[in-house]
Image (tube, rainbow, N blue to C red; front, side, top):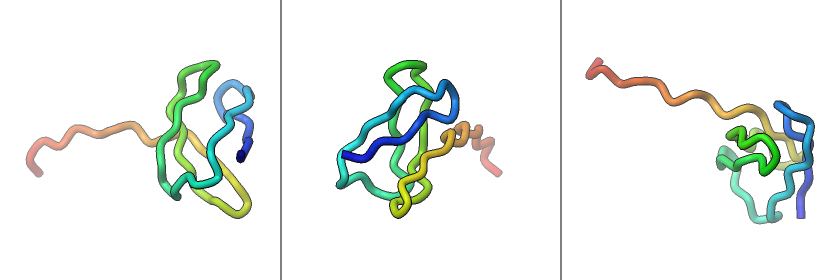
Length: 56
């Protein structure tokens, strides 16, 4: 298992080693959506907010 501190609340977030780059996971403590930005070393960051597509 891979473990990283949540950038929002500093709680431990544990994921399976098979997790893919750019996959979104949720922190169990604060419910923040996190994105896997690197696998080696394992790093997560706050997931970008979904932006509205106004047909542009």
